[in-house]
Image 1: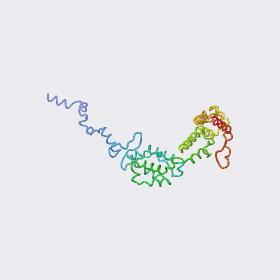
Image 2: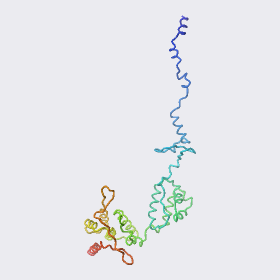
Image 3: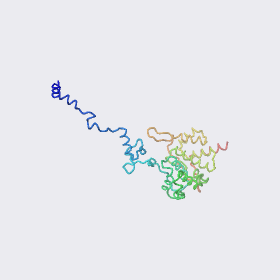
Image 4: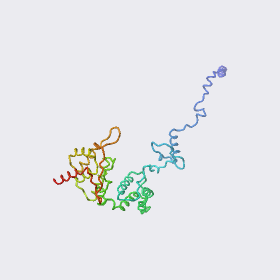
Length: 306
């Protein structure tokens, strides 16, 4: 029996031996290697990309390397408040405040409300980018004031206080700009929308100067300075039926303007020319276009009968 057993072992099938000696996870030296944990690899990549193990520099939708320290492609947390190309304060050198102050204060207020500049840096940014007289005014504030959380608002309040006398136009200036300056009248090529809006602002300036004109006077001034041609005037008169109330004139002047199909532009109904003003009388004063003299007489009759 022992001899038969030895013989079987001696002449056993080679394939069976190879199958018995096949490498497994236990006897394979490569299989014994410790397999990396996918989650650990993910954390390791996150730490190597950030340096401090956080994702503070990561922003969805952006590309590039998010590293820290001195490595290439650094995206620090404080860079999240970096200014965009259009995120700059409005520019003004402080000249001609009667004309530019209102626009500048409005633009500055909008910038303070929308800028990504840190609040503690807003005052310093306004000082560094200011020019001319405006820079001298902002420079009156101390560094400790400019670098506070309210530094930007402090600069705004200081500018507003310095130019307090120019916030509201004086009566002579408001009156001149509305009635006696050629620039207040409609320019050749100016759209009716732009003209009526610009004239509306001039009327508001005169109202703030505590000189409120009657609606009838405002309406006729608005119509007179629109410089309509004869045909456009006929169309307008048909709509208003000879009335000159400001709201009605304002609405129907804008109604004259119609879009041109296929061009993206606009045109005035019946406008085949531009009524030029007569020369102003000696000594200055508003010019009197001959095309409106008849309308002026009609206005006088209406005022006399009321």
